[in-house]
Length: 373
Image (cartoon, rainbow, N blue to C red; front, side, top):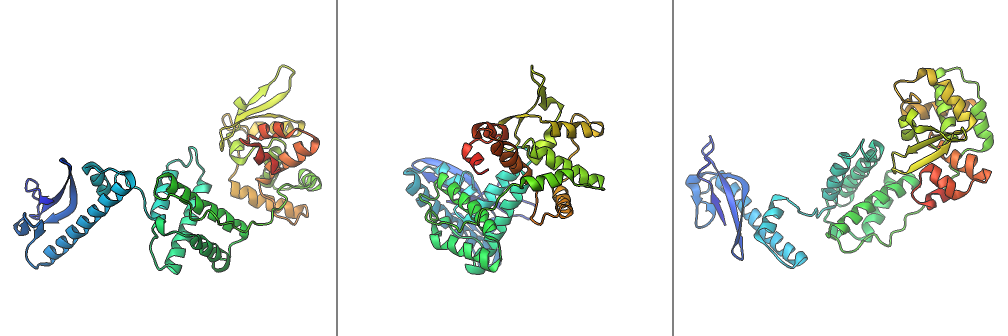
């Protein structure tokens, strides 16, 4: 039932409309979020009298709210097997209510993820989630003429059409399509884990896999990088950071975090980097070879506080790497992350270092990740 709170008359003379749900002698009250004219309120009919615009709009909202409450009642009883007034009230208020639509669930995920950026999650991955959300929103608008779609209406054909939309209409590469559908399928797993879906509608979907390219440089290409004569100090700094990472396997984030406390001297006099990876939290123990030691010494006078290196922006480094590749006559695209693959493939595995040891040095949680190298 509905009633008005005459104790809280607003400046415009309106009173807030309240709702009361009664189930098995249990009562739960809530604000309906509607202001009504108390002089028009019919306490027996739970509606406003008269034909004014205000009365018509308020009565329509009350009718919609009543239908929503009945729908929640049936849904909760069906899913949980029992019902309480508090459960229905919470559903109406949006407390603890499961997201039933795809984009609605996606937004909830992104809002939670955004709070962890800079702590346990990266801004780059956040941008990927936002990009996939925008593509999904555009796809729904163009092909379904809809603002959102109920999760329970999702079928295999949906992701197949989405795949085609990205490949043909958006012109994305096979690699981008694969990475985007992985994120979309993650939303489905989230819906399953919260109980909205009981099976994966995309279970039989197999995306076309992009041809796997060699991710590391050749030894000849790395030698060219190491011995190239570079006039620009800034570009030279990028080259040195790339080479250092190629001989230690440190990612960009870990290079930024690398400080004096991570350098340890063993009893035999050897120097080691002992650091926890920012991405996985795994411990890495990496021997410092002659070349990375020379790079540390080269930039020792430029240190700020306790950091070993003053790292520049990653996108700037990749621009500089492109310049170095051109200088060395290397036509393929070189990115900073390739240095990590250089360490795994050229510096360790090809030199006979056991895969288990390489996996530990690179901070991989699973040796299957190391097998890629």
